[in-house]
Image 1: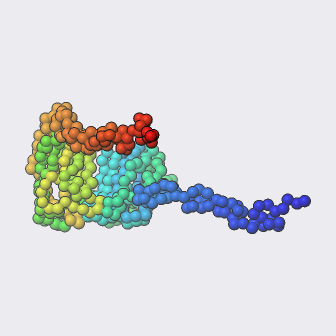
Image 2: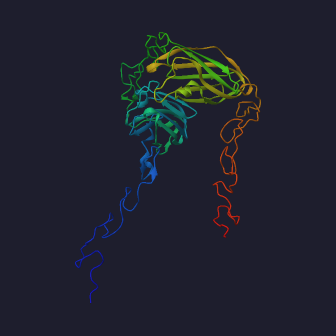
Image 3: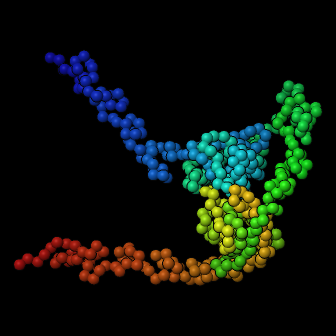
Length: 432
């Protein structure tokens, strides 16, 4: 009168079937790659790899931390070599960036409008691993966050980097040190330092040395030409000339003539009088774009800065042409300033410009600043469905750009014809 053993079990209660990944006797749950019963990988990374969670696509993480001296460390933990980086900082004001493994790798690190940009003119990189990427000088307090993180890997490939958590920052990013109650006197205890404090008993890490110009804590160095504070141009023998050329499209071309390959450039477009009458709105095109350079700009009241370089170490070959094209609004007199041109292996090339130019309103006298696709001020030319400016291609009734529509004798776009009952694509036929 017994009921017998349960399914998949013998009379002694032993499992006689195969257990699934959950340990259930005779169960059907499987581990298809994302855990027991969770299904197969479903998220596609930018490189096409299928993973179970988007965080598995990340090549690493950047993070912020206070270091106690009024600045913030930007740390990194990355599985790939870093050839360049760019990110924004929200919540505090970034005054500058320096140090860290970026400086050790020979990166040029710049800041503007709370954007931090780091790259190497020579194609060098920060090796995969972890450490302090760079140190930010900041002002203000509140919740500081990294946003819009862009990191370049080998060959200019984009690495997916997590921006990490936001942090609460005290005023200035750190504390003033204060009196620890121990009675010690903080200061520089190194007798060889230029700011040695004989009364100090606790070294606070503030010791500094004189630079080649005799400035205590200064940054001037002797360049390869033996000049203190020089940029290496006095003995390079190379020369780059820059000039403005008004363009018909309402923009200004930056022309260049160089006797050496150009690996990077930076210059200011100064427009101090009257201030604020010219604003850079875009920088693009030219031989910089053709060489795969990343070209960016920042714009302030009296000047704008244009910066171009290659994450992959590419260069613009010696010669002449249009370096890049600047789009702007407003009008006024503009000049080059603070020109920096990088040559092979980061060597500095001497540079000069051909003087200032009056930027007309809108770039070429176009008061409205509105151009059609042909570059004509207040013009009426538009792109057709094929993307041709002023073209005549239209979308037919079948949704095809430049198509001929429904064929003669057909009743729809598929080429069907009406049957004897008048039904398009029908199968009715007249009988005998």
